[in-house]
Image (cartoon, rainbow, N blue to C red; front, side):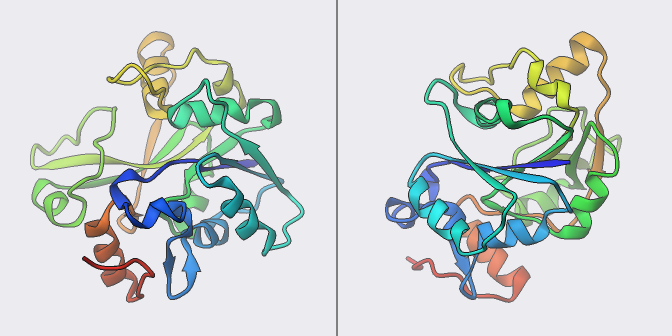
Length: 229
């Protein structure tokens, strides 16, 4: 199994912190999100880390861990979005692979469950009221909503995919500039009948802006190194 760690984003909603540091280097009790991500990964033969914005800092952080199975890929400037990052690493993907965003906080037990079979994605099935409080900025899943009209399904930004997924025609998201992994999954589901299964969790912590940093601090009972306004 291969893990593809997406660590190329700019993190515009966390400025001014991200004017100096890439978002995966936001720290909680002096532990970076990137380190938390590596700790949470299931056992894998190869870890591919896709970098771009302030990528040298990411590489410097990775060098601290002395992991022999890490390979660094710079994101192709012709590609944007999560699928763009995957395509940047396609020449190194020769097995089924986990895609995970290095600006979220995941938990190992969830990623182990996620990788028990291919064509799965990590998701939350929660009430609309809970979303407003705990996940106000999280994206809805591109797949059908929960059967309960009071609930919604959120995409947690981790996907376990078959190797042949990288051969799929990437699907552009609404703005027409970025290509997304979940949008490509939905396109394959609609056009080729590929089935994808949600693996549910309740412990995912997205880190997109200051409000989500504060939520993570409370949940983890850890302090971050970001300056509060």
